[in-house]
Amino acid sequence: MKALHYTRAQQLPEILAQRIVILDGAMGTMIQRFKLGEAQYRGEGYTGPDGAGDRFKDFPRDVKGNNELLSLTRPDVIRDIHERYLAAGADLIETNTFGATTIAQEDYGMAELAREMNLKSAQLARAACDKFSTPEHPRFVAGALGPTPKTASISPDVNDPGARNIDFEQLRAAYYEQTEALVEGGADVLLVETIFDTLNAKAALFAIDEFFEKSGERLPLIISGTVTDASGRILSGQTVTAFWHSVRHARPLAIGLNCALGATLMRPYIQELNRVAEDTFISCYPNAGLPNPMSDTGFDETPEVTSRLVHEFAAEGLVNIVGGCCGTTPDHIGAIAKAVEKVPARKMFYPAEV
Image 1 (cartoon, helix red, strand yellow):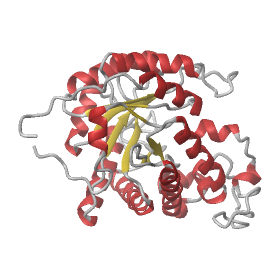
Image 2 (tube, rainbow, N blue to C red):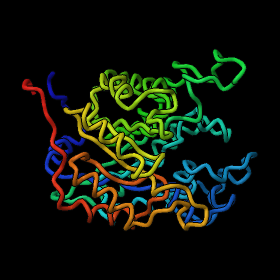
Image 3 (spheres, rainbow, N blue to C red):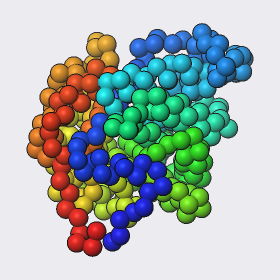
Image 4 (cartoon, helix red, strand yellow):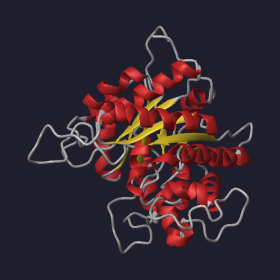
């Protein structure tokens, strides 16, 4: 198997071989801290030239909660969040595009805006990375592709096991549009994340490969699943090992887990990935523990607790990329970066041909 030639972020594999790379934390957690109302989601409070002005003032449906829309209406908020994570030590920052597919945006009646959301989000992240990058410490934009709110593998109707509310082709088309816009906007890496249904992920991977073939681009790919309960399986039923074997054909730069259980309960599954994905880098960005509505972030763990747990993963030699998911803030990412700073990166075992 020959090593892949990347057209962007060519230095990232070498950096990963030398040290643990830091991914940013939760976008949603940080947006919540701004306490934006319906008017702010429509653009009120920002008059910059890259804003939306009155474009969405009379939009007929509620848009509060549509975080991806903020890249168009409140780019100042998204820019601020990116820069806070970069200042905390993040090497990789995710675009504000977790739900920026036509499929997810249908919930708000904004499916036709998905491409624009991805393009603008990637441009915002690109500008932030360029502002903080130095020759000694380059920063990278990870174009985020979320799972969509629909599942191709599981029936939405308990009385009809064969029923589906989405199919592979619909997913492929949505992910192709998203990939194209993310790359056009300046993404360095593509991150297919929070995978709860492997068939959805396969549609994303198919679309990405299709885009690579048509465009001549090839970006490093990170694939991150989510184990949804103590059974050790993703929602569509696969164990972590089975999940890896289902997606390894895409030849990701890194495979990992995020979200869901928090670091403590995620540990055995990261250990499992470490065993089965010997020739691939491993990523891990857990929630800040379990949900807690009484907490400022909505989750239990403080930066000290999360960073200690992630340090244990690193000290065991399990991970190459670490960061945070739901409930994590720049303080969490700063604490994680400091905790793993002097810990050697997980070693990979390449086949002799490479």
